[in-house]
Image (cartoon, rainbow over all chains, first blue to last red; front, side):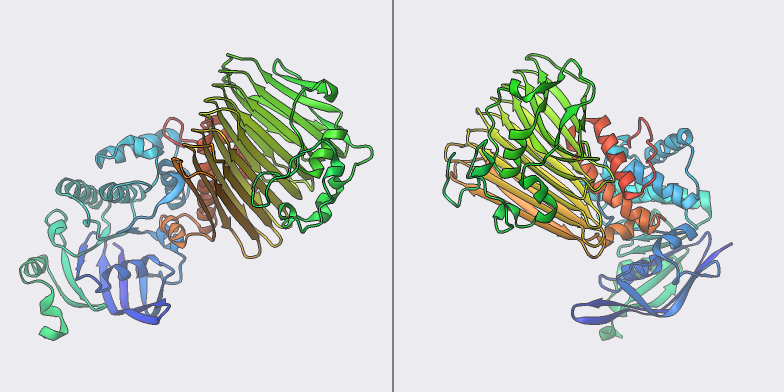
Length: 252
Length: 376
């Protein structure tokens, strides 16, 4: 059993207008095999939390700590965090011109596993993973995320999730921009990953609809840079009917 | 000898006589970026200079005495005029008409002395198709022309490789004329030498021609690499695409890209686009990029240019690193991808792969394992 432990983390971003604090004291422990949903309105900082865990250079952690199985994460480079077992499925996957999906996946899998997969088994492994997510094998030849539709990008993220098999996966608004069929396919991919791996999952979402497919063990409400309420799966239902307004200072 | 109005992008002078051209001083617009102290050896006749010949003649490739040439091409600057007047041997690549030659014709050019003049002619007969690869001798200083004639309905893909870890000085001017409905793809891969100046030019002899000029270049510390393109649209319904990408690293690395496109009054229906992108891999290099587009008619399909020089996209690096790929490897992947886009336009898989290997080697990258049958 492992755990991803976030303890009283504060983080800020520096823009032309100065430094702004976005994460204002977040503590959260995710055990292996559990799924946590972090829900909140736009601009609450929930995606920033995902980036901070992954180590995006744009954000600076000003205090607090994050550990993975007891090991300090914040002192690791972005790639070291990934090799330690963290995975971030991005809300806006980045286009990498001139780099084919197959080359990218193989390079990534080689880095994560510490050795190059054998060619024969690798091609089959990749094809099977693509088929499970209903990704056209021709995608392997395309440049990473270039000209992909919103749904294709998200499926590609989940493809990486299944091939890299991390200890902890953060899914940042993976449901956004997906139609019902794509949402179901992507969710099945995440559920298959959970069953096979006993990984912890942090699901960041604005809407409850993905929670109909991926069942959370815990739900946290994120507002203005911190977790303002935590509960079980039923908390999501309350949010669905009552909205986030109840958590704004004006209605307190 | 002709003199054109000063705003005109076309060369003002053409002559076989070196004396017609003054010795460049650095104030000329054509020479303002170049390290003249390095190139100046080719501004005067060199005693004991040799000639460049092709190693191993084949069915299509011959070494001939320059006296046997009938080309009407005239030099447009002093180094070319000197080279043309002093070169003794020429390399002639003749593709007869109505021949489709699938395998690339590899031309291994070799100089006979420390400094050499060069004259290469490539003639592709009507309705023929060929791929020519010129491997330049970078163990010697070379100056000279490559004169290309693409016949009516013919297709030529020409790849010029200027690579090698040497201090060579290299000047070459390409002069391509294309026939009716012909297609020319000319690609330069420039990674070697102390100072390199390549000037590809294209003129259209008849309507319907297309020209694609491609280039990739990598400049390291104290390397000067200049590419000076000139496309002259005189005929209607011709297209041109110019795509050059460069990567620079280290102090004193300097690249110059000049893209001159001139659309003459009669060149209605022209479709032209030129683009240069430069990637600065470290602090210290300098990339000059100068697109020029001159339109004498508005009755065209399209005309445009783009130029950008920048650093790494941090978001691309973050994405790759977030997948466990170490930073140096992520950077190399991005650079490879940057160049792969240009080389893919060659439509020559094996040549593309060979050039990618050359670039990878230059970047200090391990060879990529191909996932055969499933993309690369």
